[in-house]
Image 1 (cartoon, rainbow, N blue to C red):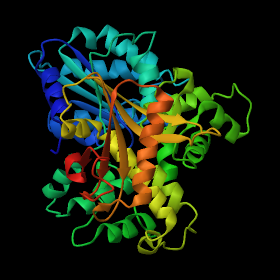
Image 2 (cartoon, rainbow, N blue to C red):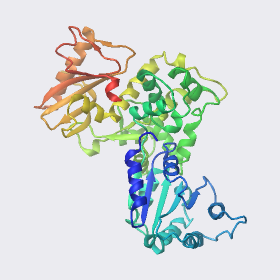
Image 3 (tube, helix red, strand yellow):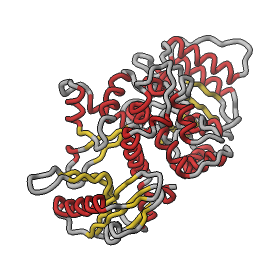
Length: 473
């Protein structure tokens, strides 16, 4: 299995422990939660149930009965429980009948949020099962859900019967660039790192998305087939993605759409204004849940307070879909080789590369030799005046060694060559930052780019360090 070392270690500890364990596994759709659990516990699961999307309470209970029949390897279907209290009592009786007092019994409940809808009484039944039986037995219960915000609010932060009952939690994140490269090599797919970067900017490190990539094709060919072909796996994934996580997906999709319109990020009030709705419509909850689910990121600009928080769309696929796929008629194929030559592509690729840099900030720190220094990451914005220009810096690293690193991030298909105009612009930006921030710290200017920098009269004495895409892997 690629990556997931810490998660596997935690699962092993839980399986080996002498006490009951309740593990909550969180992570967005298609990130590999189910694959992780089934792979690790192969042949060891005593009962497994997967929630049904958009199913009624009665259908979910029937699904439970079928799952119990499969676990028992029975020929006939047992009585369908009338509610979840009865369902979990049946599960308790089945697990008790197994004996195995010296060996951990394993229960896996997948897509739990789909079963625990309003008035379902699922959490009542599950809480009864854990508190009256599982918490006193040699048992390991894994509960899993793609609706990350729901799992956090309803399970991890529960104030009722499940309060503080979760003994371990796993938040499964997408693959990093290094893990994506390892994943392709595991599948015997050989791509150079620039090609991997192109694929990552369009789909991120979601294992299911990356599984669609084929060898013998360039990144552009793969993106054409996967995202722009009418039969492509990611052509219509956007609607499924949000509807599987949120009860009213149209509200979340609207916010994501709005955030996709600007690269610098938007404040809560700016999002509210763009939605053309009055305050109090639940926007704070939507922003929080989108952030918890990994679709957007919140940043406090340097020198500002929490009320000045900016929100950016940082989900690679959502950004790519909204920029290039959504307006193509459903029965027509797009052409990424054509779109990737446009000005819109240049703008998008720069922003997507910035997101990659922000996601791999630890790699940047390691390349700078400051991995052991306490730091905080910010953006910085200062409006222009009659006397001076405004300045925008998308990533600065405020360091405890009395220095600040300003990161200039440029996605390019070759070595960067600075000319006089660009060099003067970067010099003015650095100077303007010193003035606007009133910092007394040493300021370093770092270029983060794909291949590198050609040193010339405009870069010498201006660019302190160069970090390439190899440093991000």
